[in-house]
Length: 222
Image (cartoon, one colour):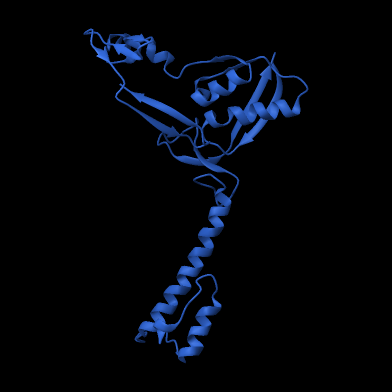
């Protein structure tokens, strides 16, 4: 009889209907043996409750991969202040501040953990709120990305962003590593590198990587 019933997991009324159609009396307590049908029905009730909870969580996520139950707009992030020295994630916000001549000209509160994904929305917000557009953008290494560089170029900004590998480039260890592409000669016309042994490193394959924002970048493997 159970196999002939069609249950809608979105409605608990179906569980009640199951009990009525089968005249099933549920038993509880120690020493009480539950029928297979009761176990199925209770399992379905549990699934429905979990589905409702997870549907609610997915609405709260809104594109994020975490949220705080005590502050649902906050996202778990690594904080610079890590007193326990264990890299513990804590709920928080990513605050962006734009400054010109020591004066704050823009502020934004973001749930994005990465600074890379906050630059474009922040500049767009400045455009809509201010009557003038700034000609140059200065930012630290955390904002460096191909997507951001392309946006800044297309919007005619003079860009001053510190490269993420700037400090590493200056070390002796990096300069002596012949395997780093920065220490090879690149031939733009032929799209190949010349290594320390005068060997040509040609293109082997090209892959596409999609960022969280949806931006697609090509990665060339030599």
